[in-house]
Image (cartoon, rainbow, N blue to C red; front, side):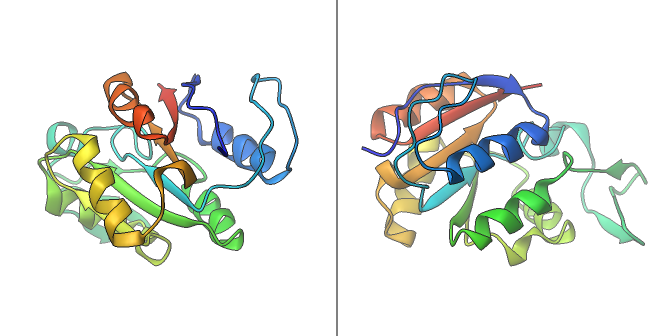
Length: 179
């Protein structure tokens, strides 16, 4: 097995992701976060969206459709919508490591979430999307089938413990982030 399925609680700051990914890329490294020795980098990293890649719930905290004004993404009320810092850099780094990226969100605002992913320019990094209101096991079953990657070769970032509880028994390594 490549990973131990243990939840780690950290701030949602994407700086954590960078540090974590750098630690993962150095085989055999133990970090101050008490990570077990990493034997191999995952083939696929799956990210939740709301409060994992951006600081809001798309279906509650903003008003799609979105427009791009210069370098800013705005909702229909003109509110600027921003992701957490460094998301593109993390995606670029994962791609340099030949790691696949998938998104899994139980959002009811499917079009809005997908539109944000595209407007932030993440579509060039994301290999697969599961954006629909269902439980995470349904998302992961679809991801596994579509991408042909075993659960043990996946790493999952999410902000909700219930998703950890649902996904970690499959053999996916789950990392819980908190705001």
